[in-house]
Length: 174
Image (cartoon, rainbow, N blue to C red; front, side):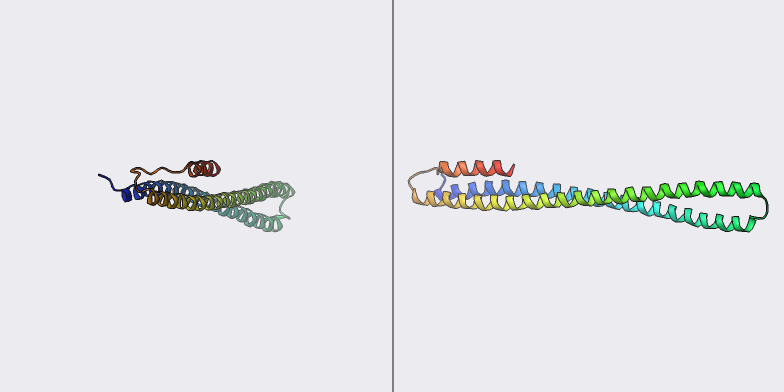
């Protein structure tokens, strides 16, 4: 035989359990997204370091070629022309690497903006969860008050207005 006081806590436990499950699921998704973004940022950072090292190596190589050209300028005009062509091709390569660096910087900025957008959206949903939790708390309190007033009724019912408010809140959170 069930007591009237056993009905309300059971319903409250079910509601709290659903809220807890929903919150935990959202929190896990948030952590997964955050981890992916951090990993991607780390990968991009490593790629930038590699590209920067390549650029620096090319610049160092360019300085060595210039020094070599100055030292061998009086050796033969054919080799000077060959060295000048190599320097020109090296400058083209250096320009390509600088363009890649700019592209990577733009990608990083876009990724950072995406990260900020994700954080903003998750934060805005956090407020909705808190509001939903408060609404549910007031519904449970109202249901408990109704049960206390109607001691002759074995099973309490939630007023239709409360049910409608809950469904409207669920639609808003989706």
